[in-house]
Structures are given as structure tokens and as C-alpha cells.
Image 1: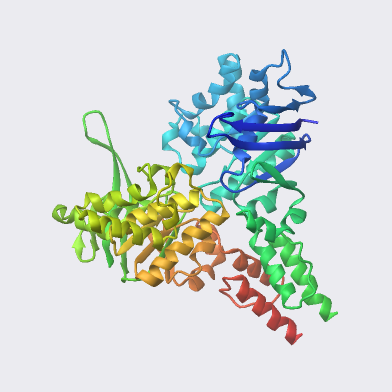
Image 2: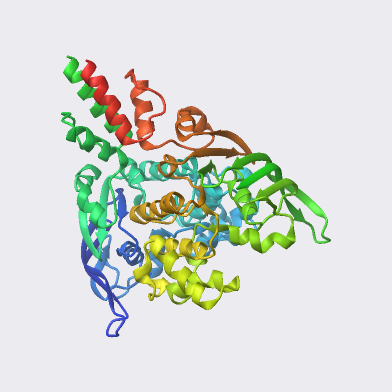
Length: 285
Length: 284
């Protein structure tokens, strides 16, 4: 059991006129190796929640267990937690600052106390993991394309060899191919390294395509929690809280509304194509 | 409204003495003509030159070679700079970088105030613009407390208050949640239809392009495809090669066709696909 969130509450500016209850009684368990999608409209509490998971913010009530240990308990090392639970912020390329790609990615492991040689080894492994070829190691990060910069920034977190990787909108502003490349890399990390992934996203299509489980946040609470097709069955309620279902889910609903006997659970292009093919051919045979 | 003739732009890198060390051609001989009142979309991967092109429209950049006319004015003509900027407004990706006022209505009034519009008329324009983007009831709010979509609509209102004839939206929805995205695109369409404002939308969301009058696709600084959304999105493989995508309904139709289901090219919306599937089924 990697992460267990127990009755977590967070209140901004407690006791003042500006008090906001940003997280209300959150209870979650995220097992090792799961690919979790976290969705919710702007201000729903999802960014506040992820910052609790690596100890950047401290709950005003409740606690979080990491591998069974209370992270607020005595003697628990927050520094270690932050290296185990890596957080990639929005537009992480804005945080690139070093003279070349490799040096930038070394920053994390160097900070953790690794020698220059060890840090470089980890940095190189992380860069290859996100698909950055060696020829870029000595280039300035500022000469790279948007998608490449973002991959370097992700490598900066991966070089600390985290067990959990949290990404806040890693594909915002990228072209469709760049988006697919990043998400494919992330899916590969999960598959090949068994890293637990928490993906914060505004794209329902991306979430439907990649994750094992979706957590929906609304007004500081967990509104839905389940596999994509279960969660997207609530598409009307999702719309009420500023979200949506993937486009194909609507298409299946429209077909059904016309009287077609189709399975409306499809959330990806492939699932929708399967369901439509079955419907068309079913009547044929 | 907008006419580009052989528009070319080179980014130059200077060494310490100020000599040109490296040149990168970002826009390469672009010719296009956008008529007043059109809703135009520009697609292209990161680094294809679309934002560099867009920055020419209100003379943030001027061409290295070729000419760009906005409403008949050459953007290289410095005397016309203010007129051009008033005529063609721009909205960028990040709402937080564009809002400067501490109260919504002050922010929207900033543009016309700078143009020297009389006070009474500023207030009138602020009211009209906020109401056009559906944000009038937030006029006394602090922009900090608005959602991303609301902030972008305030940014659009700020441009509207300058009474432009054209608005360039450079990935206005990239940072927004689904509702915010919907509200911004709806606002752009409304301004186009009801106020006759020419809209140039740059986006990576293919769904937002379906209703455009005309689509341009850029690659390596050149316009490589142009046509109606139907014509453009019929070319699934070509768009993928250009690092782009097609709307979900188009992609699903394409997948079904690959499986031998006979569907026509150029399906863009769920409605069209549902109708076609229904037709197919009833013939079986």
C-alpha cells in the first residue's frame, strides 16, 4: 500500500474572514503501480490534494500514510518523502535553468547528496527514459522544442528515482503528437518500472485512454472514484461540476437515444468502434 | 481584413558584438487573405510558426521580408501602429499574464483609457464588452477569484472594449478545464456571428475548429494545407504526419472505415456520424 490518505482536511487562512475549506475529509488509498487520473474543475481542490501527497502542504486535519508510515509522525523524513513522491508542476519547463540539459537533470540527485558521477548516471538514465537522446545532453535547455523541454523537466524529477510520480497537466499547450508522446512515455514508466502515476488532467479523452482509475474532485471532496467507464457513466453529473465525458461517450449515448441497441460504456475510440461494429454486425447475423 | 504577401520572418541570434550569429526562419513566404467577418482557424504543431505569424497581425513583430496588411494598413508603417493595434486585438494562452486590473471593470477599461476614449464612453464600452462575453455580473469582482475560463473572457472583453474589427486568439483554451474551454469558444463564435468580428483562432484542440469557415495548417513556417474543416479533416494520415490530430468523431469514423464499414469522408461531428451509422444500419 503506497499512499493512504485518512480523513484529510485542509483549510486556508483558518480563523480569518478569508477561510476556505479546500479539502474536506478526504479518504483514499492508492496502491503501488496504479495509474490514477485526477480530474476536477479549476479550484476543485485537486492541486491542493497532490501537494499534500508529497508533503509540500500539511493537512490541518487527518493524516497521510506512505508505505504504512504516518508522514506527520515523529522522525519521518519529509525530505525522503519528496524524493519518493515526485511532483511535476504545470509548465515545468519554466523551471529549467541550468547551462545544459544534463546539468539541469542532475540538480535533483545532487541535492539528495549523490556524487557528481552518481547524479550524472541517474540523470542520463532518466533522460533516456523520457526518450531524450544523448546528443541533447550538452545542449542548452532553451534550444529545445516545447515538448522536449517538458520531457527534460520530467526527467529532472525521474532522476530522483521516485516510486510515485505526480504530474499536473503535463500536456497543456503541447501539439497532439507531443501530447501522445508524453503520455505514452508515462504509460511506459508505469509498465516497465512499476512507478505509481497520478495524472492531473483536463482532457477527458486522455484520462479515458490511459488510466486504470479516475478520482473526481469537486468542492474539496471526492465526488467519484472508479474505473473510467464507471465514472463516465455519470456524465450528466460530471457536466454539472464543470467536467465532461469523452466525446465518444456522448456519441454512444446519442446512438442509444435513437434506439440503437449499443453498449454505451465506451470511453475510448477503440471501445466505441468495437461497440458500433458489434451493433452493426449483430443485426446482420 | 488581413492580407499577407510573401510574409517571411527570421529570428536572429546575435553574438556579443551584435553580429548575426544564427538565423532561424520561423515564417516562410506566407500568402493569405482573410475577409472581414470570417472565422478562421490556424493549426500547426509546436514550432510550426503559427504564433510567430499571429504576432504580425497586431505588429508585435514586423516581417523580415514581404508585407502584412491589416485593414489596408501596412504593419511596417509606424504611424499606423496604434490604429493597427486597436483594429486587431490579441488574447494569449495564460490568462494570468494578461490581466492587470484589481477589479474586473478596471481591467477592461484599461485599453480604451489608453486610447484616450472619454470617460463616459469608457464605462459604456466596459459594460457592452462585459455583457458580450457574459461577465457583466462580475464587473466589481477581483480577477484573482475568477476561474480560468472567466479570466479569459475578461481578457477578451478587454480587447473588445477597444472596438477591434479582428481578434486573434492564440491557444486561448490550453490551460482551461472543459467548461472554461466551452465558454471561451462560445464567446468567440458569438462575437463573430453577432458583432461581425473577424476571428483568428490558433488551437491544438481539433474539436474547436469544426465550425470555422476556413482552416490553415502550418508546418516549418509555411501554409501546407488550407480549406474548409471538412476538406482538412478528411486527410487523417496527412494531419498525423504533421503532428496534428482530427476531431474524435472523425477519428472514430476513420477507425470504423479501416474495419470495412462504409462511411463517407469528412465526418466532423457526433451528429453526422450518428446519422451516417443510422443510415447504414437501416440499409442492412
